[in-house]
Image (cartoon, rainbow, N blue to C red; front, side, top):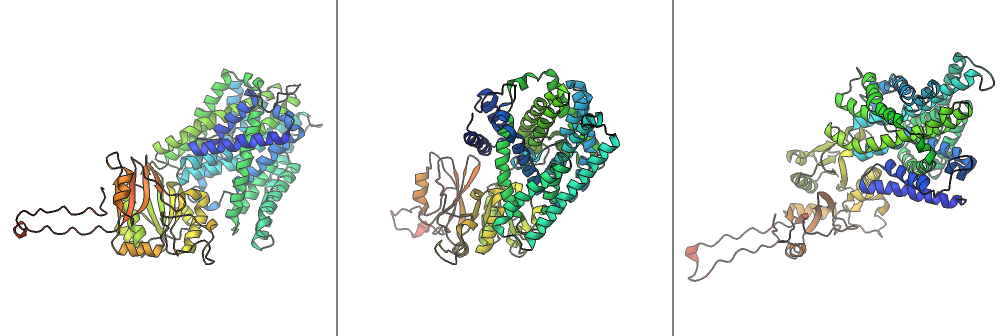
Length: 636
């Protein structure tokens, strides 16, 4: 293939298509991306055949741009990962994270290198280098897995911090070994002592970390002082990431990974008002980069790469998954105060991702040029490790977390922001339907009816940063913004939209204004309008005080939707339907149509009081008593 634009288009379709399929069917995205890349590359040869000298197809296609494309993508991915690391998340977990980094890194390095040397048969130099690379558990796979499994906050924080912090450490360990085995033996034009090599890398690492910290502080300061307009913040930040990355690489090869991670962590903890917007922008870029780069890396494989794999690779994978990782976590976390369930889960989950493949690809080529023939095995070994771990851990993290009690077994819950008599009555009915629900409000008094109804509550401002550390949003699949303050509802909807998705957020029509009213908020700030009619908040309160009730109806062949609609009357308001265990809330933008088998929850007027039956002694001779009309009373 000579058309680079067409190649980028195919890569984009395959990568984003795999991400969409993963979301649609709740599958690990990186597994589908890996399959798509292998099918497009080695199987179908869409991007062209290998080069005349056996060069992989994607390197032939992109030429000298192949390595820079991968490097830039990895830099942005690591920066975005660092941007997610807020020190406030580490409350009670500082010791656990520290132990996973040290001595965890040293233990994993030694055991991994030993497995590569004794099982695969790599030379000790190459085995040490590859052992350093294999300590990484990249954010490109960890964070999507955490999102998919809805893991509890503590183990999720451990895995996220370990993955992001260990990525640059693994790359620097590979650099250290490479310097030893190449430059230490005169391969760089002059022999260097071990002390000189270690000192050089240590100084370069300190300078790289300081560079990332300095650039991060300068960017944060300029953003806080208003020296940069909002629309220029993301592009300026992207440019600074690339400057930081390449400047550090000039000091020491692969030191840029440490620099951009330090820059991201610095900005994440600098109290920037627009940090969420910057995170969303970077997340969008990272989704594109992860999708594209993983397709490129997997499509770059050749059948010759697969032929290098034998049974020794299988036993190496078994040792890494069932011996090296569990033993590393068990030994390193002794005395760290972590429950055994969390240690067991963390000891199993360690998927490798793009950083491992990218670094292995670079050093594999470099080692072959330096005279180490077994360096050619690194790429195949790295891909085998990535494929195995993302499949094994991607499909097992959810069931294992639920079995250990570290993830919710319940259906996705409903978070109601705003306590009013009407919303509390709705919450009580949801609880009766065995739907997990919680009512959140900043007013202790407003939450009293919910507490009396034994409905779970959260007392505090839902928009506060502190709330993120006390309320696990992974438990909730839906948000109902039901306060009487339209602006607050819009803020809640906008703030939690990236967490839950716009389609899962519903907002009551607080003021009854249409979109053309200049006093109305923009639709871009709001969730879906709750209920088909979009009835406003004050009217719902009025109905509540008039005695309206929530009524549940089960539709069946004997009581079909048509009969239900006919008997319900014009005043009833469908709130939700439960279809095959899934909840569908009614909204003006997406009306729900009840079907046979659904359970319908509707808000209906209070049924009329039944008239007392007249005494038989007062009936005229021959007159029958009629049954009272059913009115709006539906089968419950």
